[in-house]
Image (cartoon, rainbow, N blue to C red; front, side):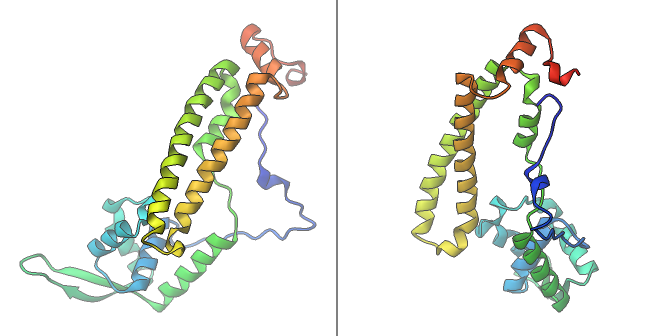
Length: 226
């Protein structure tokens, strides 16, 4: 707010924490990693890869542009992570090239996945951006907007819990951990938004009166003008 920005990532104690950075990879598109883990199961042609990603629900956790999947496969082949293992034809359909994971691909997949699991990375969620800039709107307007968001989040939480309970009936929890994580993140956001809303409504949020006064008078707090 009012031009000041901080990140939790900046507050680690350098005397106690060893900062580990991720290796720069030849391919950085998460879809490439999803393709490699799919081919780790067995060799497939690109259309089957797309079908498998959909059927296993990976498109809910990986931004998936199926139009670019062929390009991703070509890039994986270019860097030696996948290779052609054969050609398939069913009936009068065109031939389909089947790809398999190479040994280099297995190593890249394991190393890349290990990095993503072990090393936290700074991400830039759109909502975080909006929060950092929200002082440009009046407090009462922000309250109204957050109430709208909270209602949507509560609907998502209720729906997500119902879906997850149904999925537990047919799938082992191992294959639902990303869905659990997504739900917990929505629940956490709903809890935080609800608490933050109450602080603005009650006027207990430090700085809220200065925020309100600025929108009423156009006068910035003295600490931001000195």
